Amino acid sequence: MAALLIAIGNVFRRDDGAARRVLELLGPLPGARTVEVMQLSPEMAEDIAAAGRVVFIDADVNPGPARLEPAGSPSASRSPLAHALHPEEALEYARRLYGFQGEAWICRVPGTDFSTGEGLSAEAETNAREAAGLIRKLFR
Image (cartoon, rainbow, N blue to C red; front, side, top):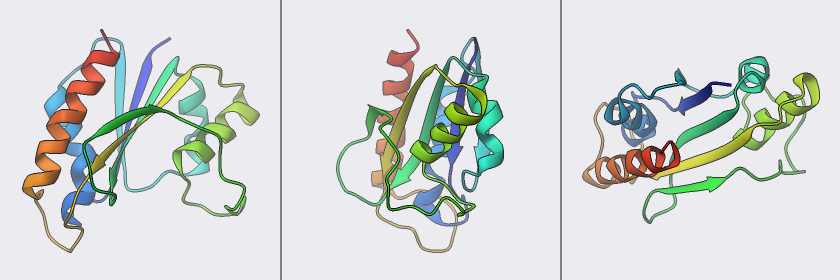
């Protein structure tokens, strides 16, 4: 089964576009398909379920280095009727509706500037480069 890398974020909100930068830095990965979205939605569950491995790449407001971690369980506090989802919720839809059994990861790319505009802060650029390295290691 192919892998799916999902870059989440708005490139017109500065560091929120860090996931797209990670995909640029990665370039093509054999056996992987990439998707860029502003937000996750329930409609993505079928694409997620078709992948053997899914990596959600998202900007993070929490400081620190880039992190690649296994996706956990969805939070019980989220509304099941919300259209925008967290990665764990998108995975839950994929599991329940389409039987997803692959591995799932979340790559968090910390940033500092989420104001209107284009381009990443120096910190987000550094973290995007680190995140690309973490994902490359995962795919070796």
